[in-house]
Image (cartoon, rainbow, N blue to C red; front, side, top):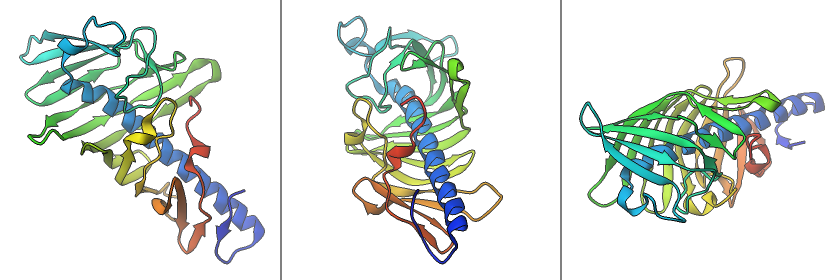
Length: 248
């Protein structure tokens, strides 16, 4: 059981520890879905001529003119692959498509799946901008859902986030259905194959309306561990990767 520091009885400590573990799991869910949305949206800035039909490159991209102006980008992960420059750290298969008109994007998840077992559904829209210094800025609003029917498992969150890339880290700021994400900085080094998308700094504030807020602090103590604060109660430093979504 997670240790919690603060004056309380053993039974209460067990209840608070369970709340804190749930807060970490909810924060991980929000971060994971934010990175999935970013993975698709950032392909808007890729050059299809460098990927289309080129063996060994993932995903393949095909760009066509859109009837309403702008263009449409088909993102094809084929039978499953993990791009070398992936933001989402798990293999994807199937296809998704992005419509881009004057900086606005709409994403259709089409036949996209996670790890060849979990279909992705929902909606995603937002804006995309590559700044003059090469950094990237996104605003994304959507309700992605990842489902595994054989286990009756479903992960879904409504998200309204801004995402930026400074050449070293992805920073996520915004809200999900149950979390307030405050400047979560996710290092690229944490996004390798099967990696844990563990922010190096920032906070996730969880509130379910039934009790005190819980603050998951990714910078304290750092070095891959977090602490959770609930009123005057603080958890021991723990590895948040112990509570990743079920499809990892």
